[in-house]
Amino acid sequence: MSKDLCLSETGVLSFNIHDVKFQNTTEDTFGEVPQKSGKTARGLKALLTNVALNIFVNNPVEFMNKVLCLWLDEKNHYIVDDKQYKLTLIELIVSLNIPMEHVMFTVIKNINVAKVKEVKKSKVKIKDNFPYYLNKEKIEYEAKICHFVYSYIIYNVSLKVDKNIIDIWNEVITFLNIFIESKAPSTLFWIFEILNIILFKLPIREIQHDKSIKNKLSTILSTMFYRTMDISVNNKVEILFEDACPLVTPMNPSIFELVALEVYGNDIYKINSVLGKKITTIDYRQSKSIFQEQKKDEGDPNDPNNVFMNILNKNKSSVAENEDSLKDFYLALHDYAFHGTVLKNEDLLIMYRNIGFITLKTLFHPTMKNVYFNEKNNDKIIVHVQSIVKNLIAVMIEKVSFNKIYIDLATEFFHNLMTNASMITSNSCKNEIMNFFLESVSKNI
Image (tube, rainbow, N blue to C red; front, top):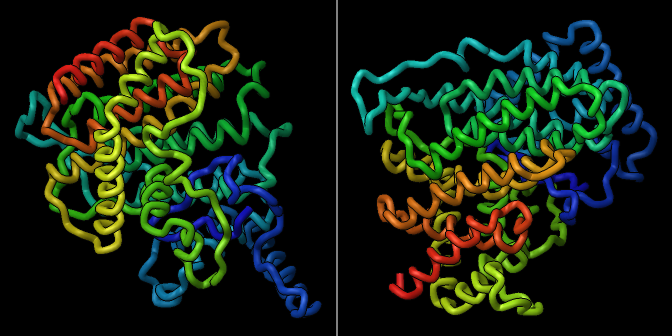
């Protein structure tokens, strides 16, 4: 694994086992010592690890409390100029080889649950709802705790299925259930990311005998799905930021990676310049082009999949515009986060609507697949797909708020759905998508 996944106060790269950055993994990264340093440095590393482990064993909750205090206190004068301190903290925790269920238990014990659950409702109705007020300090706290847990999981390359898998899942579910009660969009997207990565690393097919785990995960996933739909697709306003404020950082990984790749390209691994090394990576901007032309058999011209692809390929000028508008959006996200630009409530809601939709289209299929892996059919996933398609088409027809970025993202989602997840897309959905684009092309929308 690349030692630097751009882990910083603004985010961390998302997990994908096929990416270059996750190849050549090593289980021992904390305090890597150059060969020329000799036995003294290695002995110091071992001593530090043993001291930290002894402190954890004797005072696990208090130890984690101090770690989280350092993680949250980014203005601490001892670490303010150290761009690698978060990476060092995570590597230290991983190097202790503490069972994950114990790490999660100590993290949960240090979470201010009352702070997460605390809500305040507006007395003024907006769009038939009395929205919840969001406090900047509170939602940043939630995002940073989720950032810590995600980073620990992604760097813990020794995490694997063993006899403790049920204990691990029970602690993870406890953690998710705490944060799923948050009204903050950023927190919702973070727990979506955490669930996705842990489902990959600890597949629930290994605990088929314990149906309670899957039932709890199904409930959590359905809640996350419909809440994300409300924010990103249905434009249901249930939140109101107390004051004008900047975007919440750290960003969730699916967004952070897209933003970082757009801004830094192949120099992405120089974001944390202390490492001073560049690692060759894939040019995602080419491999993930929104409507990249592919050399493949056209197939049956009456197949809804092929009809849809032909419609898209006839509108190449729109493709270029879509790519440019999305690039501008990612660059804007970077600038807003980097400069701490204060945004009005309506602008923040539009940003989170777009961010939520990017998160949904990125994580929807793998997360659903990994929860419902052994179903006799894909009925549950198909129902969710139908819900997305129906609502998206309604929104795109109305062109709500003339949000061009959102329309572009929805178009990209339809494209990916038809090309990569055709098996879970019903024929009625395919026909709805095809008819929508046929009408759009005829009207030159």
